[in-house]
Length: 418
Image (cartoon, rainbow, N blue to C red; front, side, top):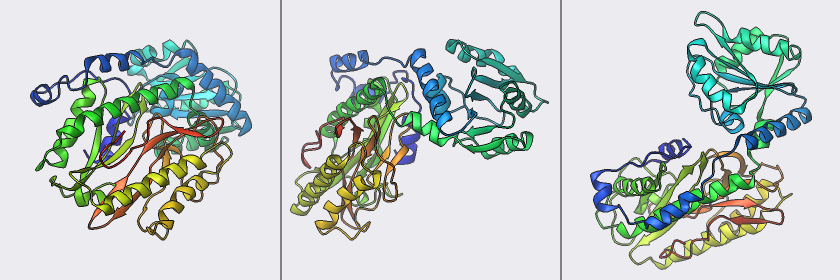
């Protein structure tokens, strides 16, 4: 499973139905102990309506700080974060407007009114306005802002909103100032609650069990996609959608692999980068092992990468700039002779993670934003040697009051992942 498809698949959120196949039944069923599966799933608790209302109140606090009078959301991850409403995007606008003062207001196509009301009703707040096929939904946006007394105010636009929607709003509401809603949406979503962290921990724990169970099934002559299929089937034993990018041998020297399919040989590096989604919260874990006996060079590179991950972890704490965390890990790799700069460690140290596999904020040079408790990132240094092999280690990292911690234990060696 190629990386972009993996990320898209694991961001879908809800528990998937248990899926079986002849291959899964024959090769995989029961390999993860049933008691492990049952105990892990028993820990899953959905986000409550009260939690979502608290998120809305926090958004309003940030709107005040940012001088925004209202926010507009299309269907998507951020709308789901605040309301629990799950709505796919099409040419017909479904949106929520959140005034700084007053109840949320929803806009939906008239023929979708029942389905929309079914999702809006559990919040027990706000009203739903509908538009017929020949009508403009932007007239309803105008009406909502008029009723809210902000027709000459500032409207924040959630950053994934499609351009035709933004243009429609701008053309209809010439008196309204449009600004990016990111300071509010990212300000809320990037700071995880204890419940969100627990859901991410569960996703990580599932991923660990899947990887541990899958690795003994590696065999010489196996293709990358075949092993990826095994991993996907194991995630389904937990009842979740998940998968992995699998790279064998020379393909591991390229962070997201190559188009060419590789076959596993004795002595190859095996890089597994994957995860799942639990109640909308993602895991993204990378482990690198050797199929057979690793060379001294492989073992040396592994140690350098592990030390770089440790350096990034040690540097991460509240008040530290994101770029300084990247720099701490990068220095270890460069000082070990795998530099300068991005020559062998070709990407940033990490990305934010939560309801999406990649979200704010990024551990990268130039990002001077200070870390705060509740931020979650990947910590994923790597060394990639074209024509030979690559090694990457990736774990979820939580910023705490006093420092940072990984949600899983670090990889020990090329023979022991956890």
